[in-house]
Amino acid sequence: MTKESISNERKAQIAKDLHTFVQNIAKGSANQASKLIGISNAYVSKMINGNWDSIADDSWRKVEKKVNNPAKRGWNL
Image (cartoon, rainbow, N blue to C red; front, side, top):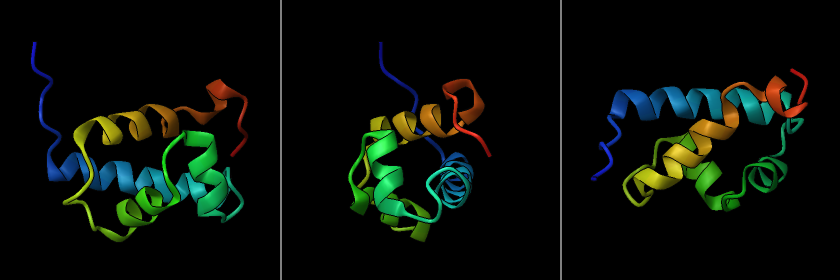
């Protein structure tokens, strides 16, 4: 079973949610956000800044899963 490719529109939404996550959960620290999510700081920066070409869809899915519903994880907005 092949996973569906992530559209640019979905990536844009994930990037927006990630930016909100960095500002509110990680107190403005991309480094802290990367630790909470479990991806590299460089990926956080690339995603937020629209440099998406080198980022695999699985990484997008991982970020999407973590930044959606932060209250479920005990992270307060």
